[in-house]
Image (cartoon, rainbow, N blue to C red; front, side, top):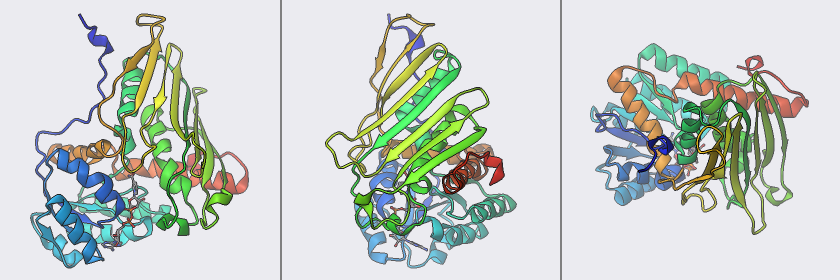
Length: 359
Ligand SMILES: NC(=O)c1ccc[n+]([C@@H]2O[C@H](COP(=O)([O-])OP(=O)(O)OC[C@H]3O[C@@H](n4cnc5c(N)ncnc54)[C@H](O)[C@@H]3O)[C@@H](O)[C@H]2O)c1
């Protein structure tokens, strides 16, 4: 008989009520590649969409059977059928949309980063709190199957106390023409933010942040950094490493993770190589506390893209119905953004610092 202690709780949990009306603002890459495919699988209730470029909104509506295309943001915000506004515009465009959605009394699902300006992110969170609306941020890597499974392994005690964590990424993403090329802060702000948030999800708040940034000659037109190494030091002695290169032209791209503890270890790969098409993660683990010496290989269902995208919206819906707090709520996200800001100060000033210095 199968040993139930080997079962891992890693799939997103949906709350009892999932038919909240969702109105989408910004119908670009991430909405079409990930959010709408994930919502379609779970039959969520997307009532309408809006984009400054109407053709984009119409295209998404056709592709995903969205009943309404709004001609203006105000029309979307005035529609009582819209209970959650999902914003997927660039970080520097998000505040103005969020501000208006909050004023209209809507709950919000915002994209990461909430803003490229920390002060503006703080103000967005303040406005949402003052208006009594829920604000969640799409830090969906927390629902990546492997990250959830590793969380469960630590939570159940099979790995013991965390001692080592690393996420290492070396990819040849198709980045030519990316809107992010114009951003003076690129890789950590827009990409590693997921890994840093996952470390917070797994281990809580680090004491120290150290980060080094460079730019690949292969991505000359990028203003910001494209290759980074960031280390989070924890009071317990745990060190968590995020090492990312977005310009690997070779035939051996990889996205790997390793988490060790005093009683075991877990390692594997994240299915990101064919982004935005996801692939299953892989995970192997062992524990000195359970069949010591045995290596378990887990066949994980679902993928970071698009399946994990159900996590933040489901958590937001749960918070709305229980009057609780979404797992990736705005105040929580400010702590991830604090680490991101600290990473930039660290790189610019060649030093380590505590997140509290910037946040
Ligand atoms: N969570 C993730 O894993 C993930 C992955 C990729 C991108 N993102 C985030 O998603 C956001 C969007 O990225 P993208 O790649 O989809 O960008 P994109 O350029 O493909 O799409 C953005 C869309 O927003 C529209 N837009 C801009 N301002 C608007 C406004 N005021 N009102 C209505 N529409 C407006 C644009 O016309 C465009 O269609 C970014 O903040 C990015 O960081 C998140």
